[in-house]
Length: 195
Image 1 (cartoon, rainbow, N blue to C red):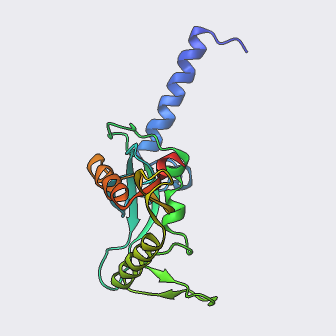
Image 2: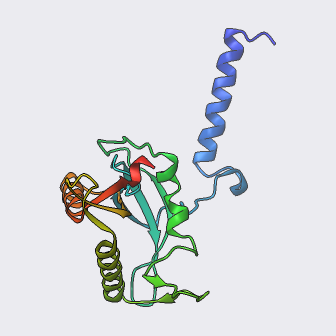
C-alpha cells in the first residue's frame, strides 16, 4: 500500500479524533482499560540484605497482612533492590529463590531433637538446645583432644569435629568465630559461601 503525504495526514487526524473521543468518554466502556488493583499496592515493602552469602545483595521484600495480633504477615514477593550499591537490583538464583525457602512448609523455625533410637523429632527450647550442644562439644573434645603428636610436639588438635560458619556474617563476626573455633583446637572449619 502506497501512503502519500495527504493519506498520512488523514490517518493521523483520524487517530487523533478517535483517541480524543475516547478520552472525552464517548467510547464504549468495554473499550477502555478497567482500573485494577496492582499486585503490590496494599503491601508492606521492606528493604533487606540477602543472608544467603557474604556478597550482601539488596532485596525488596513484600508482605501482605497488617501484622496485628490476629493477622499473620505473609511474604509473597521478593525482588532485587535497584538502589542497593552492591547488587544494583540483581539477585543470584539463591537470592531469587529466597521466597521459596522462607515460605516452605518444611522450614524449621525452632530447635528440634531426635533422641537416640527414636523416629520422631520433638521441639525443645533454645536454652535446652544450647545446653545440649555445649555438653556434646565438651564430651567429644574431652574424649578426642590431641595435646601432643607422636614426636612429642605440642599440637593441641581436635580432629573429630568441624564447624560450618554462616556466610552472611560481618568481618568481625567471622574473626571472632575463627578465634573461638581455633581456640577449641578444631582444624576443620568452613564457610557456607564456599560450599
